[in-house]
Structure formats: structure tokens, C-alpha cells
Image (cartoon, rainbow, N blue to C red; front, side, top):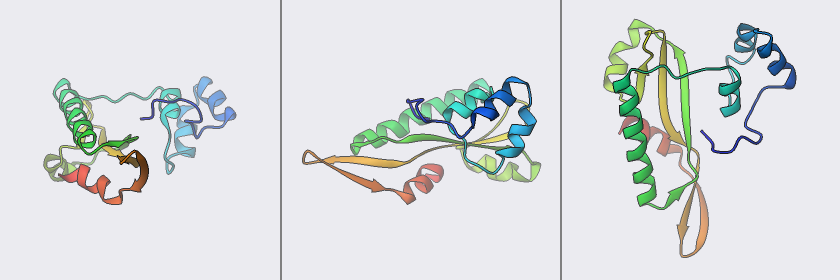
Length: 141
């Protein structure tokens, strides 16, 4: 997630009003096929509901990923979270991919990844590189 909160929302003012009125399902339905941003997650009062073990593993993996990126002078990356309803048919996939976690109540699957444009500092010049494969590598290595 971005550290900045400026312009970090997809919601319109009318959506925030509906959230304050408790019309969360209406907003979820409206945005179910869209990528939401940091402030939307907060405005909807969503929480990542992981076991203590999974939360510890997630934090440990994020540290390892950040150290890996830092080792190559890569900066300006984003934490990407996907959430969808859990289905028992996915259990085999979940067990093989440490980036996938079930919520404590077994209702949601979370996928955690690091993505984004990255800045590589070489010879005091900045070069911006889009790593399409980085997403795949960080999800499956």
C-alpha cells in the first residue's frame, strides 16, 4: 500500500456518504470488479483477518522481499492485496503458494504481492523500468 493518502481513492464523495449511512453492500456491488486504493480499504473498514502464524509469515516475507529489492537498488514498489471468496476447490492451490492465505473464518482468500514501477539508481541517474515479470516472480518463487 502506498504511504501517501493523497488521491488514493476510487470512491466518489457520494460513495463515502453511503458508507457512513451503512450501505456497505451497495458500495461493494458497485466496485466489485474495480481495483480499490488504500483509502477505500480504510473507508470500508475492511480488515485482513489472518491467523497469528500467517500474519507473522506475511510480515517475514515482506521483509525478505524488501531486502531483495533493496539489494538491487529497486525502490517505489507497492503492496498489492487481492481478496476473493474462498472455495474448497482452491485448497490445493493455496497449499502450494505461500502468497495465498485463508482468512481465520475460511471465507476469504488473500493474495499478497509486491508490484509497481520500480526505480533503479545507476550512475546517479534514474531509470524507470516496468517489471511485468516481477509480479509473477514474487508470487511464485
